[in-house]
Image 1 (cartoon, one colour):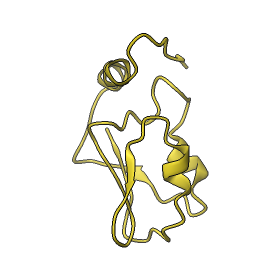
Image 2: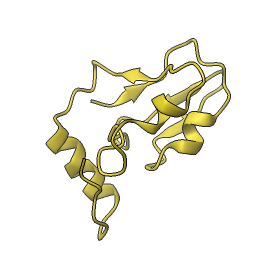
Image 3: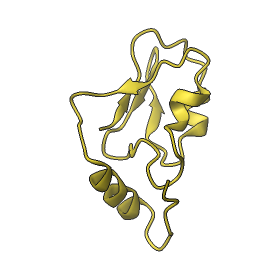
Image 4: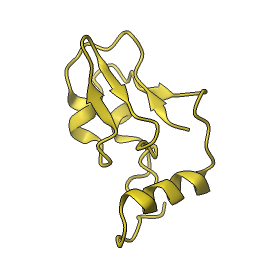
Length: 88
């Protein structure tokens, strides 16, 4: 499952700075998550960094992009060829 950023976003950019996959990008009035790049930080961290870094804890799990942990790890491997994932 990818994360998503709801409309309550205050446009601070902290989430984008913390995303290890570059999945978060700036829109006109808020940040957005590219579900093709979001791995919920599987392969990097124990929890999604965008949620932990956001001062309002706004990023949420996106029910429109549900994936298993194994699928998220496979996506991470595809985005990070040759690197070893951190497994928690």
